[in-house]
Image (cartoon, rainbow, N blue to C red; front, top):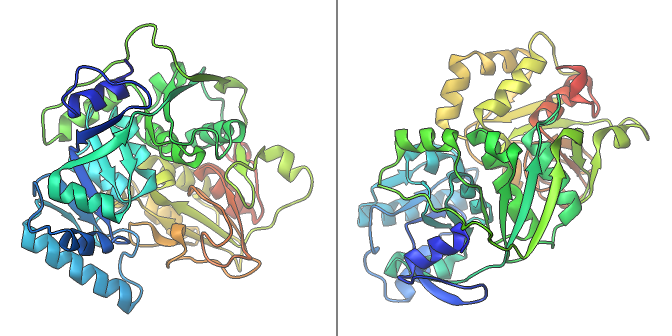
Length: 419
């Protein structure tokens, strides 16, 4: 069996599972973000009284942090009351950050677990050798009541990434290149196992970036076999004992894709689809692409490493007049580390606006939404019309280095010129 299948078998009390089977499995941790107050309503409508385990579930207030309007404030109020009533051990309020960042930091994510959240980018936690997946409000309410959920055992495809990244090529470039080949519907309800020498050498932040965007190919979940970086990270933080699952030798994948990372260049996902991927050089060779806003943040591109490379590029420079750069650290821990190392100060000196850790404008709610006909280059994960504001705005997805180089120059720019 594959490691993912072993996780599903373990949590459903079985010795083995097979592709296509429906199993009912125990959920090790459940997370509800502040878009999903309906989870509370559904919980009570179905007769719920107390959550099944107040140490295994949490609210994270990240999409509207701090609240930009009365409705979201009222939602937070009701969710806080539910959390207080149930005595939730973990509650991440507006001072904490993005769910997919704060949960690993808090030690509730570890290898061999099943984590379900009301957010599609829960695939991020495959970076830790966990099975992470998203669900809706009603399914989440049943988890809060019973601690279980049904799953269909997914087909598992391999994405093998071999070699070392050349200068200027970051994990975001790698996953964009993968997206460009597999496309937005190439892995619907499948699991993606990222393997290969490049994956084995990746740090935690790089792994999280790649697994995060597996869902942009339709994936149900993602997986990476934990390396030493992951083991060291988890050992410092894990709140429970854990067991690393491994894939049996000779496991036969449903499909396999192989990428030579050494041959990649900086990539762009151009408007208005995550699969509309081209090399950066091929885009700017046609004509300069002027930008109004650069954006560095989100559960894909707001970690310390992302902010560090942007600060390195922008230190001693200043963004052009009438443009703006918005930087949203993924968590309070990330922000504090970046302040301690001077990255925040360097970015502010370059003209950046630093906002509260959280999702910010990634979902088009606040803290940097776009006006009609504006162009934004961003380290976030989606670029469909209206994602960051106006449906008439244009969004390019890129690595944080490309975002920083571009905003420094006022138009989309190859970061290799600055590194």
